[in-house]
Image (tube, rainbow, N blue to C red):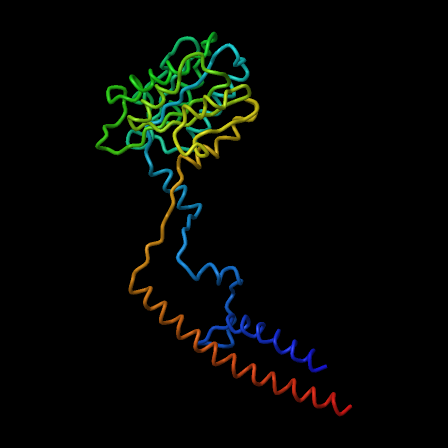
Length: 296
């Protein structure tokens, strides 16, 4: 019986510690509405990112964005329409305007065609109408040639790209379903060296190794793959999240940290004193119960 009572006291001590942590020391009758996980997480500064802040940061981050889309023979007409829907959906998620995000489209197969430049359409409706008018080119898959044309002609100030002094991110999103019929590694490296961030979206038969050779690092943030064009629109939110990702680091005032440490020390001392008093009372009660049971 004494062994059982001792174990009970031991367990109760831990329970009391947790219960005491749930009380407001300035007002013991007020129980703080915190879970254990919340108390644990509040112990140290941490990174935080609210959805509202993400949307705001995304809208306030201007881009010079060029879509490079594969319209070779392997992309059927219905599938190409899915690509255009994906582009239009992406445009809808961005803040488009002269001082915000500008969009261009480079279309390629065995030849390369710049459908419109960054300076041509500066509203969402205008861009989406231009996307809707794009026709597939058919034939081969000259991805390297398309990347080079985008770098040399689409990402220039003459074509509507902002100067480096503006510090506007230059982003290329390549959408392809095949293996390139030319070299992509060297031209992609050259494009990245000029400051162009490359995302590679592969569909169906796309060659994963080629996607990795084209994309910027880290590859897990810049390479995407879907099995069919029928589900490519599901990538919209994923690509947007990567494009607009903003990590907010909490910078703490040193004075606030000192005050917090002092408060934590005071709280710890108060809890220890309170635990001793409560635990002593519990032990006395248990001893009384033990004595009563011993007399029975």
